[in-house]
Image 1: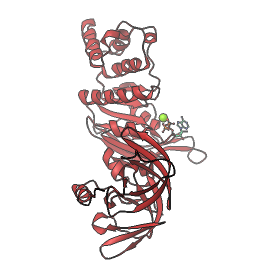
Image 2: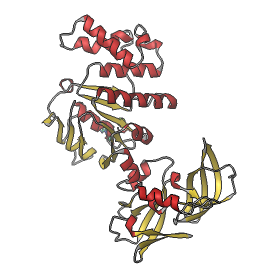
Image 3: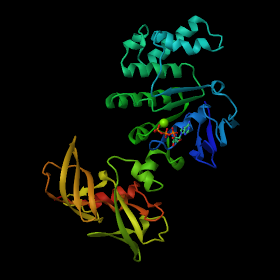
Image 4: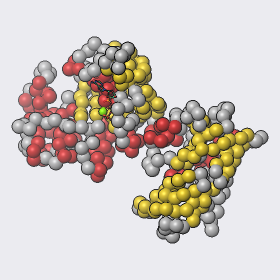
Length: 388
Ligand SMILES: Nc1ncnc2c1ncn2[C@@H]1O[C@H](COP(=O)(O)OP(=O)(O)OP(=O)(O)O)[C@@H](O)[C@H]1O
Ligand SMILES: [Mg+2]
């Protein structure tokens, strides 16, 4: 169990005065004992470099890495008592699963007898449901089974920290979903503080206690998955998190006595001031709508914007559909129910509750208003619901 801290950590590769690369810039992150941190961001944003600094494989150029309040910058990787699982989970090919699992324990100076080790191996294998595979060699395992053995090797040592770098990237989509649930359950069960790198926002949202969103080596936001989704600190986070992507339109904003008037091309609506906490000093904004938040106007009256949309493509997904269409302010993507009468060329009126509208300052790209999920939002939506 370890409380992990990164304190203004910077990593520069090469000469900072010449063509050095600042891979990680002034990163401060606090991960409580037993917490599951996900480092999320696009390729090259510094995720692996951050993880390697936590693991002791890379030395910070500036700043401190602390385990339980003690600076570990000078502690070598092998003395940090961490377990790492990577994308290419290297198992020893000539060893059985049993021997692969036992290897880490044998190597350590831990006073364990062969019986102790066997007991640990069986216990770990049962936890991962690979007890039937103990006598197999890696070549006889599927990708998912191999990854389970790799996880087993990591947890059997009960390290202070788990570090994962895209451990599921080589698995197919279905297996990836199963494995991420398993990693999540396993981590909760063993309660070991973890840092997990991925560029897959869906994976991050389902597995994390806390997400650190990085872009170009800089921390954009540190927060719980729902915070990052509902109150993205800025436009970058808003666009990176959520699927399909958030719709964004340029708009102007003006003020009346008790509301803000938002004018989009071809549509305008009022945002009651009680829904907006930030001080609005700009009149140029970007308005964001999550595809999941749209309703068809004929099903709900929400006092929000109405977007007259011509349907281009309908992609059914279970009981809902993702609809791509054209509207006056631009391309619209909506995820809606009741789509059986929708097809290309059809006219659709889409609306959204003011509570669910996002607003960003067009210049600074900082969030002005997020998605309110308080009960008041739900109450109002259902109170004004109309059946047609
Ligand atoms: N050893 C190195 N020498 C020089 N530059 C490096 C080195 N390692 C990483 N970089 C640079 O640092 C930046 C961050 O790299 P990093 O590997 O941390 O990104 P990442 O977020 O893990 O990306 P990906 O999702 O593609 O794995 C990149 O610009 C990369 O080119
Ligand atoms: Mg990487």
